[in-house]
Amino acid sequence: MKYDIEEIKDCSCEEIHEELICKAKDHMPQEETLYDLAELFKVFGDTTRIKILYALFSSEMCVCDIADLLGMTHSAISHQLRVLKQARLVKFRKEGKVVYYSLDDNHISQIFNCGLSHIQETYNK
Image (cartoon, rainbow, N blue to C red; front, side):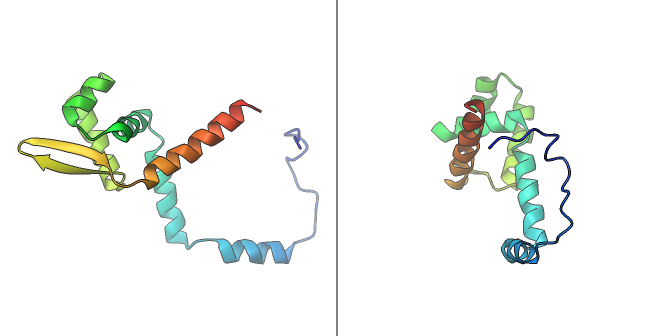
């Protein structure tokens, strides 16, 4: 059921629904966990980082490969990889002088798949 934004602007209800509040409190993660979740989603708030993650879905890559793919400088890519590494979204391995980056685990693709499904669903409404 669609609502006009003006219809749902304010709640005219004066009754507090204690059972709903208790249920929500019981399922609410701890404050620190919510903070960490918000920080994780901030990392996804940059198009360059999204592109890097998508590139790494197909295979591991070095900074040079990613920079060439995205048409960016090595230092710009290195900076974004550092942010992704700190968020534990990518990991790396060294082979001689070359550093290869890959996704840290399969949860990242699950997050992306959920996000894409939501976006595509929104387009189809």
